[in-house]
Amino acid sequence: PIEQREYLVNGEMRQWAGKTQDVWSPIYVQTPSGLEQKRIGSYPITNPEDAMEILDAAVKAFDHGRGEWPSMSVAHRIECVEKFTQQMITKRDEVVKLLMWEIGKSLGDSQKEFDRTVQYIYDTIGALKDIDRNSSRFMIEEGIIGQVRRSPLGIVLCMGPFNYPLNETFTTLIPALIMGNIVMFKPPKHGTLLHYPLLEAFRTSFPAGVINTIYGRGNSVVPQLMESGRIDALTLIGSSKVADKLKKMHPKVNRLRAILGLDAKNAAIVTESADLELAVKECMLGSLSFNGQRCTALKMMWVHESLVDAFNKRMSEEIGKLKLGMMWEKGVNITPLPEPNKPAYLKELIEDAIAHGAKVVNEGGGESFKSIVYPALVYPVNKEMKVWHEEQFGPLVPVVAFSDIQEPINYLIESSHGQQVSIFSKDVHQISELMDVAVHQVSRVNINSQCQRGPDGFPFTGRKDSAEGTLSVTAALRSFSIRTVVATKE
Ligand code: G3H
Image 1 (spheres, rainbow, N blue to C red):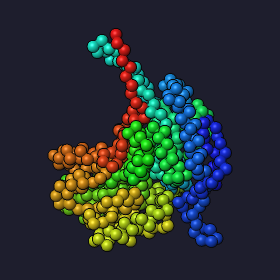
Image 2: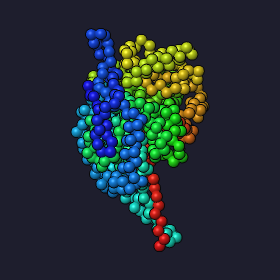
Image 3: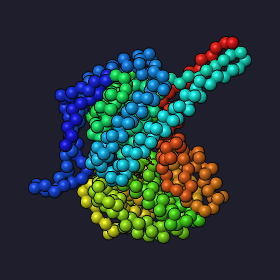
Image 4: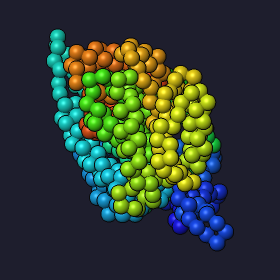
């Protein structure tokens, strides 16, 4: 087990003597007293007083933009981030192992998450060099010379999600840092320990106070930070409810920049002209990769009535081929879920759907075991069911049949979510008709492919309750900075 007792503040690795949080892996192991979850370590639970002291250090490090980091040249900041990344790469095996054990991500997906993160950092550096060149551009108009300068926002409170605890955290943390902001970093509850091997690299790569860590339950430390009014930017990948609550705590919410990746319920619309095999392949990936625990996952399949039986049959066959098992097993698809209440919640959604007239189409295909949940394809889903409205965030595939294309269109319009949609069709006129509607409801329309965030150069955001601000390489650099025009009279 890893017993983390250090936290980083003001460039110092401080020893924690207070309360700690035990970390349990989502896997169950056989012990003499029966099946038990495996304890893999512990980490500090920052108390509110310490969090405020850490915030003081952060505010001092920023010093109204006059601190060492915000006033440093872009080239020098890039050097620090490069230094950090080189050290991070040497920790790959340790971090990957913790990703597997802490959140139940398969070995292959954990390695991908690590490598994608490193690539993201290098892409960010490349994009910043471009932005930096452009920001020194002069505009001359009516005897006035204007020069645009990009400045940091100030103190960024950075909170990542459990499903991509490294990658999605770094897609906010790195652009925030490299633009000269000071970061207060709180890793997700499931996915804290994996950041521990990187703490020393943070300490030695950046000037004192640039990155400061807080740990534990968000609801005990974060409210005080928000209420202090000294957080300039909130970045959270998580639930809309939590984001709303936190924003409201800030006394000057109009001055708070929020960069948020929130709830989503992306739909697949499989029209009568769709290539069935392609739709099945993409819907399998879209709904069940990493056990359906992706904000971009397909969470509602709308299938034309002429194809729905064939679609359900082929999806059930493909689900039957999935390998359930442990993160390190070769070829494993479905792994343990890290949220302890998730298996019971999924069961509740299924029972509710059955009570309202649906069936588990692939019943009997495989067995769930504790935290490993065999995917269920539920059909026909309707508005009365919880799964119609709630984001299942797990291995549950709801299918709805439609006869008129207006039905999925109405679903998109009525939904409070607006991240992405996938359209499966060979009919260009129908694609164009659906696109005309979808572009007003979601931030990305995928034609004949699943929903996803990558390539990471594409802007990543959402409409309605699904996001605020935009992430991904270049967009994130803009999100974590502000432009000032220096106007000089000729
Ligand atoms: O959970 C949300 C992630 O941003 C999804 O990313 O589409 O690359 O799996 P992904």
